[in-house]
Image (cartoon, rainbow, N blue to C red; front, top):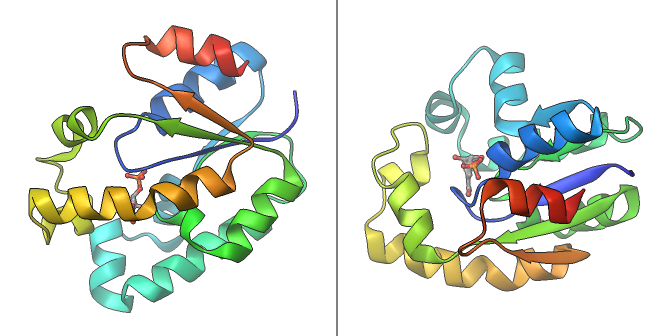
Length: 161
Ligand code: S3P
């Protein structure tokens, strides 16, 4: 299997599916947020607070550039597919899967999460608007769209593998 990028909105299951996929394929798994937290020694809310969102977006792009050559599974952050340069890089480097989950499922998973600054500062309807606004960019970035609705983690993982 080639390098795999998982893209999609917050809470669509990128990390959970990435870990399983890594287990089945024996390829290393990297969670972008986790890697950025490790590298900076700060939480995502602290990075947003201290450096601002744009700097965080630059860190995401830097991360993608760092992992150019390694064969691995990468769970991207929910905003990664918004930058054209990121989309180009991912599509050129590996296979990109968009995990397309219904907003209702997503909201259930992220509503009370304190570690996602965008959720912290927004209402449900603002997040839903963002979800719709981003949808086309996720689609555009991906080689494959995986509908996760009513599919178990194992089924989605099996499909990708
Ligand atoms: C973000 C998604 C988060 C994280 C940050 C911003 C976004 O990652 O990168 O809070 O803009 O959608 P997950 O998609 O892993 O939650």
